[in-house]
Length: 224
Length: 414
Image (cartoon, rainbow over all chains, first blue to last red):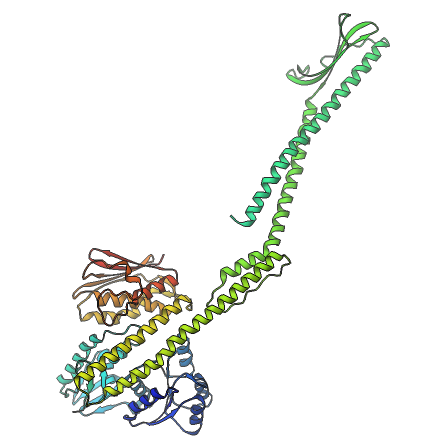
């Protein structure tokens, strides 16, 4: 999976690359519009993470280029611009998703995976994690022979955990993920109930307890 | 009062008395001339008869228009005019006559000649003349009035154009003023003045808008860097519980800062009228949001009573409408005690969100920025002030009331 990050803020770019490196992607960085277009002409990418406010122009023009050249890839806009018009324009021009800075790295990671899943279609039907088999297209989790019945929230939560395996996830990041970008997010304490229920259902079906609390600050999906 | 009304009214105040006075004056003038004519005529005929009698004629009395009487010899020569009511010999009722009484000596004998002429026809004449004067004056008045109105309209047209344009101006839309051409210096000055004012207002607006947007955007990037660094740092397994806890605090505060930044930007944008209203079905917007808040309330066993009238619309920006509803719903869920109830009532008059109160009525300052009711770490103290400013930006009012142990927030829709 080749990922191109277009971001002029060096520190943020370094952090994003570091976080994503554990996912086994081939990562490239373009620090401006010129480098981005150059990279797109020379290589094939599966995903672009695109900042809009670039020193030599508007990142939206990358979208035009992708559209005009018929390059098939997933695009996530990451920007400090919060204006509704920008979001609408971005999505109209073929972006798959839109994240406003500041965002949680775990959220970015989860969104990348969602796009990969969507693009893979039936091929990406199953996520297998030890005794768990998860089918995102059917919203189905199977442990052994048992199919687990999850609520929408628990389902979202499970995918989020699986997408960010082995990472500490702060409650706020989880709450924001569940809130569908509402202006005022979920009360972080509220997610406790959902995590508890998810844990309970997984264990009842015979799965191990992979979800660990991290000193009251968040949770971690830990391989055991 | 409108300018045209005012000028028309002052015009009428001047013109009507002048026309009335001159009309009455003219009427009397004509009547006097007519009367003099009658008197002169009577005198002339009487003198002619007297002359004929001197030649030996013996005229007979013809009542009521001619009488001749003998007077005592020492009578003076006089000439008297007067009005007199006399019975009409044909119709029998009283009729007004003008008479001349000429006392004179004819061939040494004193005679009095009385000559009368009916004033009835003359009165008809006066009425006709008066009517004619009135008619002419009315026509004159109406013509003058129309002329004056049209002239005023034409003269003031550039002024009204400026006025109309000023009413329609929105700083949020980049508009140029279109002036009607005028040769009147005062209006030219007015147009220039307004144009200058408008240009500087637009410039200030653009500067302010750029500033708020820059301030908010440029702050988001460093916040994003801080947040990403903390998130990465947290993955370090060698960190102690204390260190992790400190990191979490930093993370929370960063998050708070970022939310505050977004909220303040939103407030600035509302104040700058950057959002255009659209017709929205209120019940739809509420239903879209409600499940999330009902879910949040499950933990506290909240009881919901929802009564939504379908055909209620408001003129509202879609996203801001959601922000407004979210704020009220979120507050209701957050501040209702365990097992309490939330009542949502939408009618075509108002939208009302009431929830069981934990304590007493809230102070009026709840709508002020950064006012916090209780110590809630995740509360910015901006929600209700945003809610109120959104309502007011689109012409609705948001009220708070405390009734029957319930907090009630009400948006007046009509």
